[in-house]
Length: 479
Image 1 (cartoon, one colour):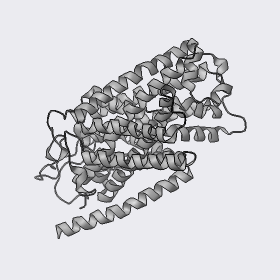
Image 2: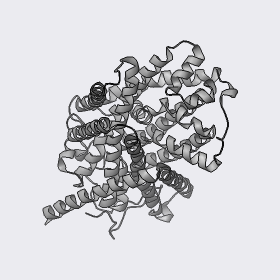
Image 3: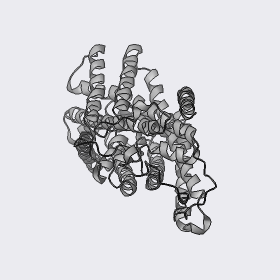
Image 4: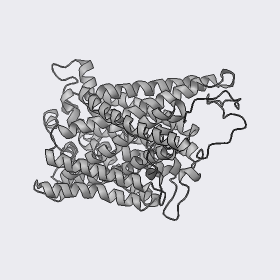
């Protein structure tokens, strides 16, 4: 099934350059969220997300557990890492604005999959769906393993492999059960989790500025590093922190007034997460001595102890980290099922993924949590050193595939508009944003590293076989 334009007469293009639908052609069945193919409202347990919950979904998925480790991770490169953070933030905001524009054009569940398929056809759509799905369930495994480290502060597990494995699996399955209960509960959990982690993190970030000491910052550039090398290396570590900017777009079918609210939620959520990231990292840099920060395993705990004295910071930060990561697991579990659901409606994933119950694609949730659980078991069996770090970097690469395709799709839509019908000022603005988002996505690929790109390409090639199988089944059914 091709999405290439036909030579039919078309309605006038919109002001943003979007080509009009062929005149006389019926609107696609799944164009409007909530329509028959988009799941609709499925009982009292299904509920559409308003702007606050959609914004919480974006913020909750962007801010996972990484913020609690990032300051120590980038400290060895010097304060130039703050410059890398600022550049990444600008790129993430450009990407958020592009997703907002795309969601106004195609407000359907699936996000990057929908945009890539509409612009470039089935195979590009499948690659976007496949790579995003990989990103989601591998990220869930990573988040669960990281959460266990903070749980150990509250409930000492004494390094027992069976106990830590059981805790990691429990942390994965609890959000999955919330998802299976319906979108009503997903939204409630996400909103509560975002509030509980946003308020204390903001207090630490803002409070740390009152205790800021410039002598703690350390050198701008680590000795022996070039500025370009340090900037790129620190950016590679920070890249994972902005995954999730597309969250509202992926779940557009569950967002009330998606044409209006998806874009607003994406931008507001990204700005909120960026403020927390930048203020929090700056506060830690300014309150913890550089030599100590480089070797810290709990930089926010060290910052709280430096600000207020005592040793209660470790426990408080562990609670915040657990809330943060459970909220991220809750949101990513939903997203991991939404993209396969959208692809399955079009025959690009097995039809089982297209079944919804209480507004949630239940098969996608179950398959995702099972795969993440198996990866977690594998992780604890072979050991975390090296293997899991590579897998986390793989998610950075696989996430950039739908980002690149979405940015390119926006450029395609803009270039396809009839010149006499286009608002040129808006066209220039949107083209610049799409170009910046594309460049940002390419930087993400480069920052992932050779090993991650190599592993990620293998994941993508495995998906080609799945696409071939599904395409053959569609052709047989059409014959």
